[in-house]
Structures are given as structure tokens and as C-alpha cells.
Length: 298
Image (cartoon, rainbow, N blue to C red; front, side):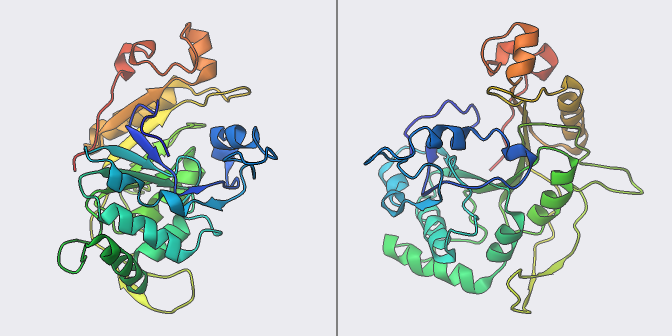
């Protein structure tokens, strides 16, 4: 959508879809919904339909026009795996990513079930291959699966979300897997114990079935664990405060697990308490031991 963004862990945003609906506590103060609904009903405005799910096919080719490599956040104003986004349109978005290996794409979802089902479905991957040919890319020869330039992640605001979404992410083919613990609304245990491993180190299954009742089983790769963790507090009016102990605990777990850790922001309530401006997103606003902004490899 934009050539620039203020999001500290990316450089650009690209919205082939806009609009969404809430699915969990992390959605309660969605910045994208607040922004889009501001323009609902204004004839001719890009967000005339507010935050209703809207496909933006005219944007599919936008990354092909960006010649210098970028880190690109995919659908900052939506969730690509929303039920109202057709499988084929998701495949077209993946084809555009496959056709631009110079860029690194960062994709987040709260729809972990559909993500896992589609990315493990060989028939759907053939659809990606067909659309990639439009860009002159033959994924059977020139490409690879999973897409090496796609960093695939799930939003994790609390332990309930972690226990649901992280195992699904680990059962999904991806070159880089990550979580965004923002807004961090409670403590999250990723590692667990030897007797009861946490969601980041245990896979619930090594063979999964699609969510669409095909009865076909797909093998998934045997990579375990996460490659990146982003954490931060909630911003905006009515934001719920983050406890610094939650962020520090995630930092320490990442250190134990050898996972790069990125502390994004304090969030509005904590920033106000500590005398920082806005949502406390400057690195200098954070306590010294949380001034960590590591990036994943690959």
C-alpha cells in the first residue's frame, strides 16, 4: 500500500486486501479498523466501505515496481487468510511474492487453521505456480517451496492464542516462522518444561489433514521452533497496559531458545507511566535491558 511505514520492523506495507473482523482479544483496539471506519460512507474514498473486506487486485503487481530490496509487511490493513478472501486471490498474492525474490515479505495472521491448510495443499500450490507464470517465473524450475523470501507469522497476544496458533504455524511450511506478541496482553510461555514442552518447541502432529475435508494427508517438514519473536504493548485510547515482566520473560525465553528478539514499543499506558512520548516506540524510550531489536536470519 505504501512506499514507507513507521512500523519499526519493516520498511514498506503492501495491502492486496483491506478489511477484517475481530477474532480474539488482540483485535479489540485494531488500529486498521479505527482508521478505515473513519472514512466509511465518503463517496470515492479508498475506504468508502470502511473496514469491510475488500480485494485490491490493482495492487498485486506493486512490488514488481519496487526495484530495490525491501522488507514488506503483507496486508497491514487486513488478514490474508480471512474467510472472505478467495483461495485463488491468496495464490495470486503468493505468486507476486514468488516473482520478486529480492524482497522479504512479512506475513501475519490470526487465521492459523486456513493458513496451515492452504500451505500444505499441493493443489493450491499448483495454483500459485500457474499465476507465477504470468511473471515469467516457473516455480518448478526457478523457485522453491516454501517461498524462501516469505517470513510467515501468527499474532500471539496471550497464552490462549499461543497454544492455538503456534502449533499450527509449526505445522506449516515456511522458510522463517515468527510471532508478533503485540499487543502483549498477558504472560506467554513458549518453551515450557522438559516434562511439558511449550507451544514453540512441540509439534502437535507430523501429518495433518486439510480443514476442508479432502481426507488427503500431507507431510510437513521437521523443523521445530520459531525464528523470530516481536513483542510490544498496546497503543491508542483505552489501551491495556503491558507488564514489563511479560516482555522480559519473552526476552529471556528467546535467549534460552536462541531466537532473535525484537522489542517494538512500550504501549501507550506504560509510555505515559515512564514519561515517554506517544506509544513509546523509540528505542531510547525502553528500559535499557529491553533495547533489543534483533532480526531473523534469511
